[in-house]
Length: 342
Image 1 (tube, one colour):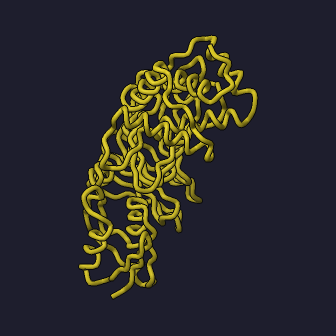
Image 2 (cartoon, rainbow, N blue to C red; image 1 turned 135 degrees about the vertical axis):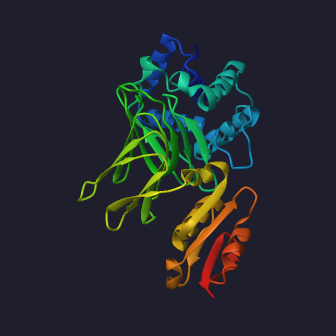
Image 3 (cartoon, rainbow, N blue to C red; image 1 turned 45 degrees about the vertical axis):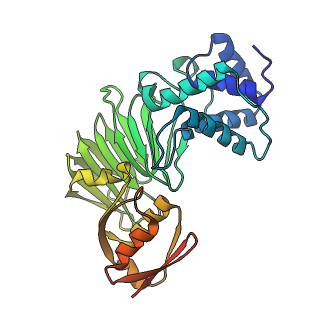
């Protein structure tokens, strides 16, 4: 075992940690290094996030182990705040651990804790945080095997000991969940003023704080939803029911819906069902990584219907469809778009 005083040695330990291959002695070395300084804990947390982001691609790229490895190195170098990454090639054992860890994240995370199993569950206290940038979407598995899709501009966080005593996650943005059933450990999603109690089910939660409504749509199973508003509303959803929570009035209501429409985004589609223009604009901003300004206030009350493929249609093609309604026109200046009333 080398003296752990370089990033390459630490990265080797972290790679082994992620793939659950560390010996008791190596775990001790890693724990000692983490306890040396807050910066070490921060570095460790950043590396965990890089493992995740090595699997995040745009909608046109499929997972490739070699490319994922190159992406890991690229993002690692960028995250070191312009420090020069001079290692030409990692040792073969490190490469194998990296590929194993990425594969575990993508396919086998449900079979065991990729964050180190029970023996190292308390290695650090910080939460695991997953952030999906604009223009992307990501598929992941939680340590208990629960499948999660995260939409662009979304953040999911959970404690390092997730699944040991409880299964609670925090979501900002939009996520689709296929929750693994565990009778003695209910699954909770906390999202601003909403708390969702799940035993085993499939549902979509959309709750971007910049939007005026939050929506929970159930596909299979059942969920209990608590609204932490003045009225403390509580709902039990059945398949193909949806809760719409008005952020301004703090009142929620249920409605019947085609639940499959709420999943269009996981397949790279944008589905708008009589959606207000400001919400459409924000969704286009997140999906295409652009900035949209609505120049006329009266446009903000307009609602539109449409179904688009963000992998096959450009932002201009989507805007052309909206403009074909004769209600608005648009101007494109680089990544800035202005919507005007006709």
